[in-house]
Image 1: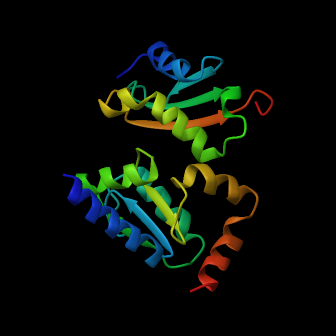
Image 2: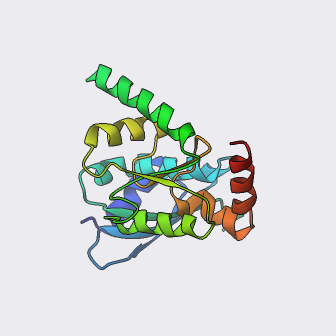
Length: 79
Length: 112
């Protein structure tokens, strides 16, 4: 389990300008949908955007605090 | 540890092009053991092309080798024509909305 603020904190260490919205998909605080808007994605394909977020959340994913993650990754003008 | 990773990487590098559509996942085609693997199977069932599911649920060394090669931490992992596509919720979902999946599969299977 992880709180949304801590999850968002991880994302923002990698993408300081990120606007992040989080949905707890199962109410168990470990299956999330997140929508991340950041210009750090500019020029990056979808897979690389997801890789960026997976790297930012590597720790809570490795230690099991996050089980499943659905990601929407957009630049500011795509959002 | 490093030599087992290499031989695993070699197996993976052999398996992926050999199977035009290849899904590394949890469970088998007949008995998927995770919702995402099941979704991936259902995604490809729609197109009617043959696809292979390799169950790596209990094969941690291979899962680690796969994550290393693809720089992608999660399962399922989809390869089409030897190329990595993540899972079906990302690239393939977007491509499907634009009707690009069928032409891709037609092209990849024609090369066979």
